[in-house]
Length: 586
Image (cartoon, rainbow, N blue to C red):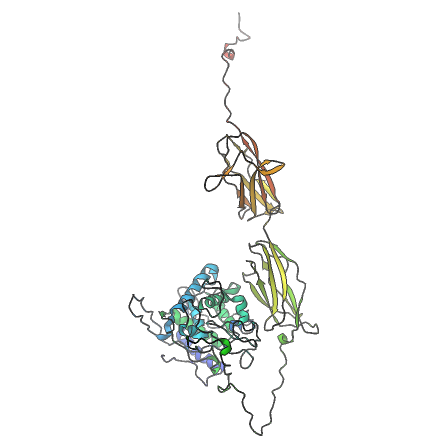
């Protein structure tokens, strides 16, 4: 591996030293300087106001502030290699600029997906590559199978509070194999409590696996893009990165790799990527090293990772003979640790029509065992179920800090187009307490009135077609009723809504006769234009009935009659010109 200027080495453990080393490289490589593709402006590495509020995934962001690789890119900018031809070896150029093929594909696929689902985010795939580099060394240099799944789990150290954040188990070991404490998992190092809501299926196999680089890259993209962020704005990008791991040194390291990758990179075969060697905190407690793919390790079989300052020993340190044992002073519990349960704080009934904002919000209160309110506690609200409803801003999860009265109120819910029931779940971040579930329901869009636009009489000759189409307008409580479902039926009579078997009719796509149309929908302005009507050989007056969700009904009269003809004059009848004038003289 080429020597790296400013790489953090053992003995330089303090955050100040780390930040200084990274800042030196950052200054030389100018991360944040304006680029042509996103119009980024130089702004340094100052976090935005919302960065310190923490990420949605628990204490310390998506990773729980787990250790990360601090290796920095070389000062020399990479030169992209030309596209290889069949049978020609790939030129690797600068080793650090090479990204394993499957891992690189996962980043680019995630960027494409986010460009379609959240175009306003402007997520560059190079940001995912930069985070993947510092979190797992690009999935241990690309040790993944053909589907993008790592040969063995990539696990961070136990987050047991010993040198790291304290995050008690939230997944019963399902993702990290540890039923006591959480551990960051996978190429993008998500902690289980974050993956539970942020996980995505990036390769379309029907699973959300944090150890799959496609799933993890797409999840990371959505995580960075949440809350309506625009990553082409430097302050918002900084906030997104700090939300992933709340450390200024981490931010600078990621920005350095981002700028390096933006200057050029190339694809290398899976499993041959350059491996980082230095980790934050001057510790070996980063993601677990890769065991042999032929003998994949299970999370349960891995030894505990040495903690910072332990000198590499996994056992207890022996006491010095003759030295009295001293216990550290007791640390007062954090507000979160004093919470015993959640109580409802006056949440209203959660019902809304599709496309509208719910009139009520979910509000909960954190309380101690004695029922005392606890302030400054983070509460997570998560939308659960088969629904496209979201919180304001388009997210399915929101984290709110309790106020002085211990109350946290979720953002307003916005109903999607999918009708039916779903659940809003409130839980305390960083605790395994029982949450509170709230039932929410989305009802179909409705109309309570239908009117015909235009008053032209709808007539047709037998066997012909109606010259005018039926045009309607739907309203609900006087307002436009857009996207409301409607049905049109040619009925037998005003008192008999049975479909008629004669008279006017519509045509389907194959030109066949149909007298009932379903799946009609008003447009955004509440307008509905029915297809052209035709008539068979039966003359008479017929009825077309249109109904909508919500009960609006309108009956339209259709007339089928032969065309009117002029009556010829009777030859025996003298014309007015042959009649003698009254003034004529005999």
